[in-house]
Image (tube, rainbow, N blue to C red; front, side, top):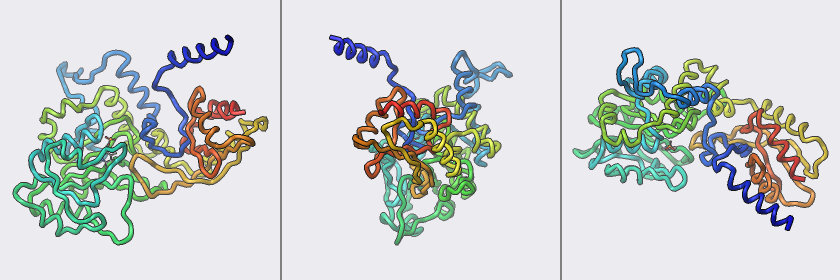
Length: 402
Ligand SMILES: *Cc1c(COP(=O)(O)O)cnc(C)c1O
């Protein structure tokens, strides 16, 4: 009877609990799509609260006393951060790509290299988006090699645009060749065909000084001459879910005016978070300090190790669980920096009588679920993606494993 009462109580508690909850990401994947991608900066959170607690000037110019555009809050920031003549924010990058293709290439040809027809994840495939837009996909080159002449030969009277898609979550290495954005721009200019780049993960700051080479910035794409560039707000940019389109004013006008623009428009909470996140980039030092994704990606391994030691000290020695601090590798995730190994430190947990899978399962069932990864018979908790403020909850979950 008591057991039954306990079960009923637990079931009731489960029902009352919110479905969308905080979790502790100890996977070491910084931009984890299943875990909400980038956490927001304190400024972005404050901006969301301020804009949505009451009313806000979302589409109202308070000085002039008249209607304005929600784009006004982010457009100038995006322009000054990327050097683009025009900018437009939508709901996410998939929507940005769909909108650009629908507005500029419906029932016409879009030339793409076979090496760039990517599946991003969860069966989201670029060719499907293209099909949805009504654009005709013209594939050129082969999986590993595409040359300038492949694009040139494919251009015809029905060509609407040349598209370059960031390879995101993979790299082709070895016997390979692709055509740079600058080369595509030269071809496009000569043939009067616009060039659109889907950057995927939109990088606004140079990550190379932080030891993360391999991603170019949106400003570099504009400088290379891309007519339009699209990217996500919640990947390397470190902001809210959003899709950002930057580029030339003429093409942007067609995008802005297309009826689909309304269907994929960005909501006010995202505008608020995006504006605050972009504002941080005006001072790169502030961006790396305040934007969690950038901070986590660039944090020196020694600092991660110090956090691992702090956690180990918090655990004490009472537990059945053996833990040691081990050197490992984190990943950027979010389809960015796929080949960058980011050195990190993990807490490696093993239990005298229980398999790592059982520990993994139990930590997932904690009040604040903890997600790690099982490797070689142990549960690894990567401290790169764990915030200092989460250490007490994480320590409690581990102590409760006994
Ligand atoms: C992630 C990604 C997208 C989709 O972006 P969302 O913001 O998730 O909609 C599109 N293209 C590329 C190349 C990507 O990496």
